Length: 111
Image 1 (spheres, helix red, strand yellow):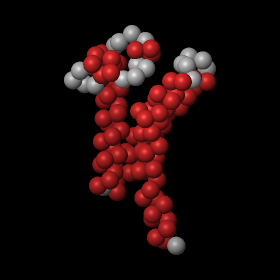
Image 2 (cartoon, rainbow, N blue to C red):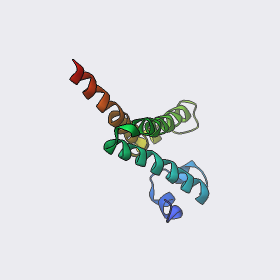
Image 3 (cartoon, rainbow, N blue to C red):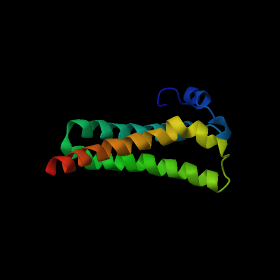
Image 4 (cartoon, rainbow, N blue to C red):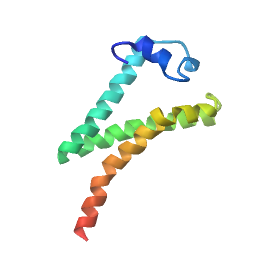
């Protein structure tokens, strides 16, 4: 996305239907995903990074909720939600699992 935003925009299914290409916006999205991913990866190596991972997961989850809201409000076609599944809805689900898994493990160890 950073190196070739136009190529990325053309390659992602359904992206062209969302509006005209904007290289700056595509790069902004990439940076947000990079920061969220880095926070999640960092939390895998350092317990102190869990708050950063929480905020990374929160960004991903809110982004997915915006997609749901747009579909519910009629601004997006409902079928787009299925197209968005692997790229919009799966990442926050995995991120929430990553963030919450250590808490469940710690709670189980205390019992």
